[in-house]
Image (cartoon, rainbow, N blue to C red; front, side, top):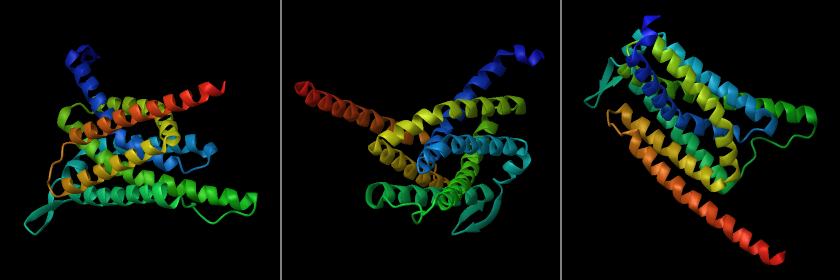
Length: 252
């Protein structure tokens, strides 16, 4: 138990936990947007399952570090570019995220399409809801693996102790679990914020795809651009609220 008295352990734990939370932002946004398409009574369950998959995939990768690090070895070369297993995961994950975010933007802005044919009775409605639920959980599980790989490789580069990594991942996912519902509710209440969040996911998808070809795009730039856009949109939301309040006051 002497290692618990080592301040370096606690500093590493705090830094890694904070980094895991930051790296989990895109995961939370992806989950919140997909979960928003479910009936209200299924959303909390989907969030818990989605973040549960995120924690399981991260822990599974942590306990198979030799395999994870083996993913960085070159599998083949193409057009003078070395391609590893990690590159393939990032490539297909990035393309999937680009497709999904672009599709959701189309649905939000243009189509407002239904997720399936209208149900004619309660049993059919329940069956359609279950299909949608498990389809969304499957999509969350796929992207969880991509985000987890990036997260675990980052953790390995920062900390040597597996126990510190596991503790940081568990705490980070618990924080994400607490934050997921208010973030999801806020995104649902403000369609313009939802489109901004989807645009953020498009940028993340582009970054993952570029990373697969060894074009490094620091996520800090993406987070800074998203934070600036959210601040501007927050000011717009506040201004709209004031205008509505001013319109209501003369009527009293």
